[in-house]
Image (tube, rainbow, N blue to C red; front, side, top):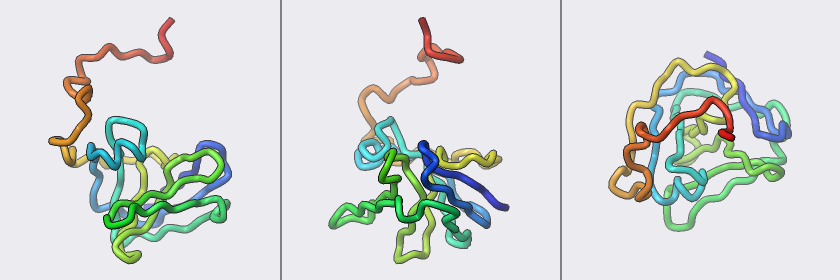
Amino acid sequence: MNYSGGCLCGAVRFEVEGDFEHFFLCHCARCRKGSGSSNAANLFARSAALRWLSGESMVAVYELPGSRHGRAFCKACGSPLPTSQDGGSLLVVPAGSLETDLAMRPQGHLFMASRASWDDRLDEVPRFDALPD
């Protein structure tokens, strides 16, 4: 399968060729800070290949010292982007960066014990199709 994606401002474009083995929603403090949300939604692949179509020079990578935590993002708009971990053997792709439909569903929530205090019973919160008045 081929997946395409990019950043919010359009400076960075990429393609992933291959299949994702895992799809997790991580609620750890590091992923919350990195995403600015309740969780990071990441796809993981050991056999898929990442190809930058444009803007590779606009990709910045931050690796948290003393940890396995890292993230890539666009230098212009800050959008999360794919990155390699485990010495390049593991591709991590933020699900929201993809523009291709993804048939795979999240397989689980990670680090629920350290989730944000407000990240509870979110299915009970009202839902809107647009910004409410």
